[in-house]
Length: 77
Image 1 (cartoon, rainbow, N blue to C red):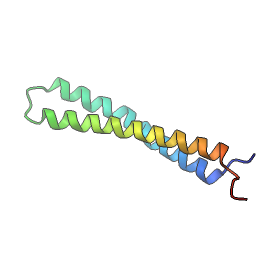
Image 2: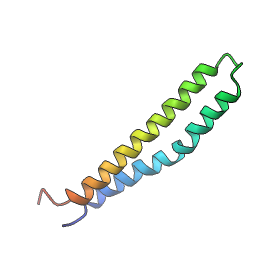
Image 3: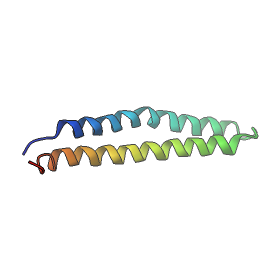
């Protein structure tokens, strides 16, 4: 059983892309809650929620890709 290193690297790239979003999303949400009187409050809150949702998607995609590289690595040979 061999690991497909190209697919593994792709999964790690997904997870490394999600890492900064995991910090940026809650910071944006927190700053929007601190400025509720601002007219752009709903847009900033929506942006923070979208950033958090995209981070969760990237984590899901990265873990699935890593699992695929570990268990389906040598199927086509």
